Amino acid sequence: MSPESPTIETHGLSKRYRGGQLAVDGLELSVPQGAVFGFLGPNGSGKTTTIRMLMGLIGPTAGRVELFGEPIPQATNRVLPRVGALIEGPAHYPYLTGADNLARYDAADRSADPKTRNARVADALERVGLSSAAQKKAKAYSLGMKQRLGLAAALLQPRDLLVLDEPTNGLDPQGMREIRSLIKSLAADGTTVFLSSHLLDEIEQVCTHAAVMSKGRLVVQGTVGELGAGLRARLAVTTPDAVAAEMVLKTVLVAAGSASGDAQVHVEGDRVSCDADGLEPDAVCAALVGAGVRVFAFGIERPSLEDAFVALTGEGFDVAQ
Amino acid sequence: MSLSSSVGNSGTAESTAVQNGTAEVPAGRAVSRGARTARPRIRLRGSFALNELATMFGRIRNLALLGALAAIPLALGIAIKLTTNHPDGGGGFISQVSNNGLFLVFSSLTITLPVFLPLALGVVAGDSISGEAGQGTLRYLLVAPVGRNRLLAVKGGALVVFCVVASFTVAVSAFVIGLILFPIGQVTLLSGESISFGAALVKAVIITLLVAASLLGLASIGLFVSTLTDTAIAAMAVTVGVTVLSGILQTIPQLSSIQPWLFTDQWTSFADLLRDPVYTPNIVHNVLIQALYVAVFGSAAWARLSSRDVLA
Image 1 (spheres, rainbow over the protein chains, first blue to last red):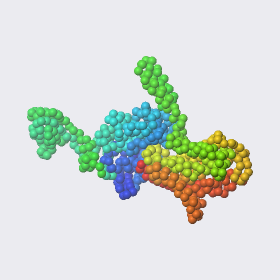
Image 2: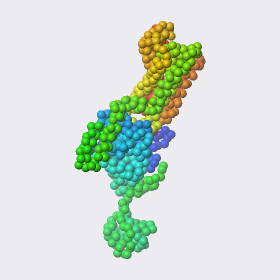
Image 3: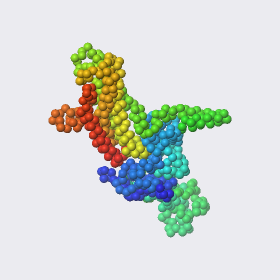
């Protein structure tokens, strides 16, 4: 592996299932080393199919996959010990205890040292907060506990790459927060994290990079900053004096050099907003107050990933294929 | 956490506890966790093959299957004991059981081989890959990564062990019950000579191994079918169904040309070991058929598993 080779790279990756459905179409994915990479897309957009190809579970119809610069699936046995994965929900042996489930997955990995197995199993359970349920049969686990057990399996060894497909599924808000801070601490240790999710907030909170899938195609990829770059921040005022506020903002925009202020000021009930580009918020606020506008709330709104997604795909995020 | 580190931890925690009473709780937790992990440490240590065997023979369902197999000689022994006043009622091995308990081993194997052993094996073999696929653990084994060839080898090896264990479960159970219920002594062979009890016991062990070997063809069919589907129950049904079908084909005279190729054809050949000299052609024929089935269906299972898209 050369130092500059991306952790995950795909070239023209396509998968057509029997029955003719093109699930993934010409994917050119590049996940840099050390990134927390958010993999976004509505249900049915080809995220899980892509992850299955990354892990060598299914063969691509066309194109190729490289992990750490090595070809998949040819190099799976060499590469996958460095990868921890949670794919399409956790799976376990219901008749084994949590600890025995992990021990079995660990035994399946030839590179794992049996001498340290119990220590590593206990460690992984500790990290996901399952120590007290280690000796319970997995069939007695709740959905959230099963999800944690799946995460523990991915953490049995120090990994260079974690592939997490919807890791916070089934978790309560507290659990989601724990998982997010776990991902952050892993990333801080230099682990590359590939995180698929349909929860935009989640991606926005933890990711440095993101890619957006739609109908099997990659719409865009880049740093989270780049994705939002196409969208401008907006200045928004909440006031009962909407008409007066609109007038002030138009004047301010003209003064700031905008061609025509008219089109850019948007009034929505008691909320008045305009493009924040080139405006000085403190001056605008002073102008508003000076004009006698009662300001209830005032601020610059950064575009969310959801705005970016809608702008990129022209559809709401939850629209299934 | 290893035992040594948990001891170290609790030691540290105890020394902290001297200064700070609140440290008692974590100390207690560390100790109890160390104690609780002591059991799986021994059982699950080592390779994936050992883990597979521990999982197979630790599963309640499989133990129940073996328990049922062990109960068959008991039922047979009691039935023979109760009807021992009517010796003209049975034929073959069964008629000899009341004279010599060792014949309960041969009778039990004769009775279980056509139905009960294939049933138990069909469940375990049919479940081997499809069960993992159905519950989703197959994908996690593959990304561990277990390696597809290694997985198949371990599953196949575990099935061989199961065939041996299942056959010996019947044999040992029959031997013990025969010992309890019936007299023991010299054994009269099918060819008329008598041999010592010890010599007969050796033959019983070899016969049990031959019965286990007779099941290998079916085991490889089950393993292959198991790679075709994610529905374990379907694979089990097909595997058991194949045995029934083979048994039916065996009885149709018009099909005599294909009968020597059926895996059930020479299942009764183990009885030839009870002749002096041992009549070997059918035993050899049986071993060859089983080897052929293992080669054909083992290769098919490998071809299927190594190329298959794992979607479950």
